Length: 162
Image (cartoon, rainbow, N blue to C red; front, side):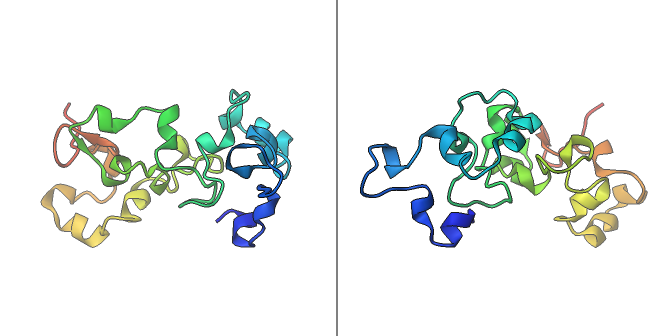
């Protein structure tokens, strides 16, 4: 939940009696957000380099969300490919636009901004014991993405066809 919302400080952003702006906001677009968020830090972030006068609420929910940065569901698709449009079968989090189930934009320095590296990422949701019961998974050292596409594919198990 966004701090002012959680604390009941609605008037940090809204003025119900004097505002002529949409949603009774006290300022428009980015100006509202950078009154509290450090503009130097915001614009130095590599994901915000070309946002110019983009309204922050195009990607972030100003009231709350499912992740630390209040990124809206599927906001990643504004810049990144939407696998729902290219794969016949799509991994559940991808299908729902929940990119942050696996990726942590803005804070992680791992390859592809993954929350965890290797199998640990997949076992964060998938049951490791059940996976290794399958005869195809006898080699416990191979990363899942060597054989499976993590976003989806043209077969139910997202097997990479070579």
